[in-house]
Length: 446
Ligand SMILES: Nc1ncnc2c1ncn2[C@@H]1O[C@H](COP(=O)(O)OP(=O)(O)OP(=O)(O)O)[C@@H](O)[C@H]1O
Image 1 (cartoon, rainbow, N blue to C red):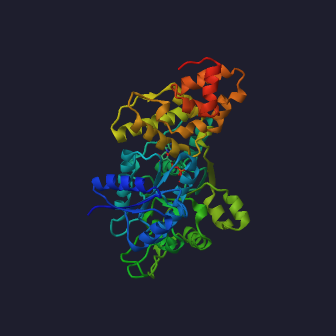
Image 2: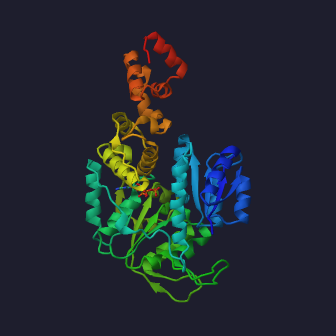
């Protein structure tokens, strides 16, 4: 049976183009042009994938995402976004989005993302319902880095890993918190047992007990099979609670009880199951502040925070930056069966000055997209998203107002952008017309 995809975008011709392309690839595709239409369709029919624009005329893609996750938890949602919305896209991952892809959409890239999302859906469909995301440990390649931040990070990981202490990992989205949690698990005595990652932000409140503790068939409407909860699935191993700050107060109470008593009771069962698990939690918000506000239980906070690891932003790991970039390049080459050798000098410069709001995840996505678009041996600046040139630091470096020698600044910007005037104008923080006038003024011929 072909997989079902709902495409939500107010650009009707784009929707039709994508529909035709995906139908040719064997998918069953439905289009919706507003958030309201999308929600009506989702309520009436189950889809494997929902592909939605972030900006919609009557609402936004995040609203569509929330509705999908409430109605059909295992439907995977992919957001389509311009790079100006990259922060929203990054946040969407916390709400349970599978991934986001940058606009303009590249057909091969979207197809690749859809197929990867479908694999995840298929894994979750296995009966009896298995908890999501039991990571295939052998396939994970952990890059360590060489910066001072990395050295300290890895010292902490190797010190805490062999213990049974609970660890709280704090860091911005995409900084590698789950990777760190996994690395702790792999360096512990529990490494041969399961590592179960639970995205607490993506679990609807009503389903949380069943997700964590499991249920028996028939114990509530919709419980069509026995379900093993995450705690039972992680028995003997490690449970990773991602975005733990998003748990509702009621679920926090249940979780604390399970952690203290080391027993869980599936919904509809009279029998308690003993569990032996280590907990690693992650958050990108200030949990101590949430405790002060009364949004997060203090007793649970202390139970989770026996040891705390702060993960730096990618922009603070300058010495690691190109190590990660080369790692993601090798991964993209493997995935896309390409042989791109490296990055041109101006791309390397740009990477070092860019802010990376989505951290490692953003870097991985941008490099993969660039590898796909690259026709030569090296990734050059013209295959990067234009908006990367707009990063504030870049503007400081190249802005004409901060340069003594305006003519040199213009020449450098032109050189760095391969004489692309639009990109050079963005780099210089002036409009194209002003750039043309200045080219005339300084007699710069292209
Ligand atoms: N040390 C590392 N080595 C190689 N790849 C890494 C490393 N850390 C992170 N990554 C890559 O970066 C991506 C983001 O990492 P991860 O999912 O662990 O971040 P996160 O902080 O848990 O994100 P979120 O807060 O959104 O859940 C991963 O897909 C992984 O491929």
